[in-house]
Amino acid sequence: MMHQPSPMLVYNLRTGRIVERDESAAIEWVRSELRDGQCVIAPTDTVIGLLADARNPLAVANIARIKGRTSATPAPVLIDSVAMAVRLATPSMMGPLSRIADLWPGPLSVIVDIDDPLGEAVNPTVGTAALRVPAVPWLRALCRDMPLAASSANRHGVATETSVKGAIAALTAGSYDAPLTLAIDPLGDGAAGTIASTVVDLTCQPPTIVRQGALAYEVVAERLPGLTTPMS
Image 1 (tube, rainbow, N blue to C red):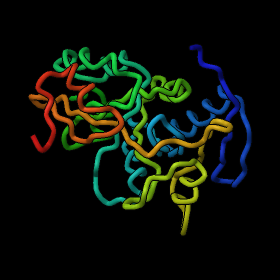
Image 2 (cartoon, rainbow, N blue to C red; image 1 turned 30 degrees about the vertical axis):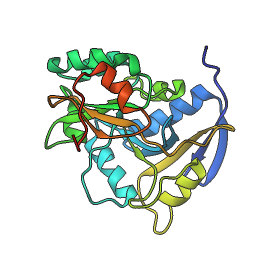
Image 3 (cartoon, rainbow, N blue to C red; image 1 turned 90 degrees about the horizontal axis):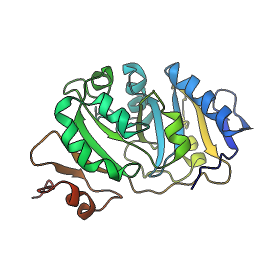
Image 4 (cartoon, one colour; image 1 turned 180 degrees about the vertical axis):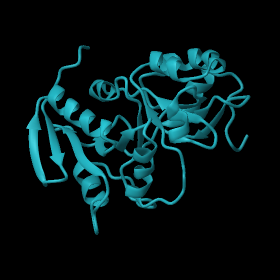
């Protein structure tokens, strides 16, 4: 089915104003903020996300700052296509990627060795990243040629928010001086689920599910024989 663009609400967190824009204008506004190193809230096909340019180490670090998280847990990275995954990953990852490619777009994140500056930005001690192609067309447009670090838009240790408004309230409460400048919300469709993506580590043998999420183990195991879980 062809994607039908819809109007979007853009929350300007600098001014407190909410404006309506057509989809292309809203996306370009958000992309401009992301290119400038800012963080943005957006609904995804899994949970409400907190996004930043994955190649900008300071912007990626600000995700943890905004969430109030002290740990250096690497954020997954949203990309626009399997082709982008092929460009980002090392040659040794091509075989495993080809076996799971039909599950994208969808709620599957795969940890791969990265041959790109974003590896050092997202996970500097290891140089890997968990890549995912989201099922939402406008979200893929948002990360066109700009991989986006994407964490759940909630304070650390607090339940994941299920609406853009809820995420804004949670992340801007108290003394607010963080570089979180915009939130984007498709008009009339601003709610998301609370189930994160399934995360599979392709850098180890056999591949291992490190987080069970929206995609069932059995579906992934069909493509990756010998797939294990942490408890296996």
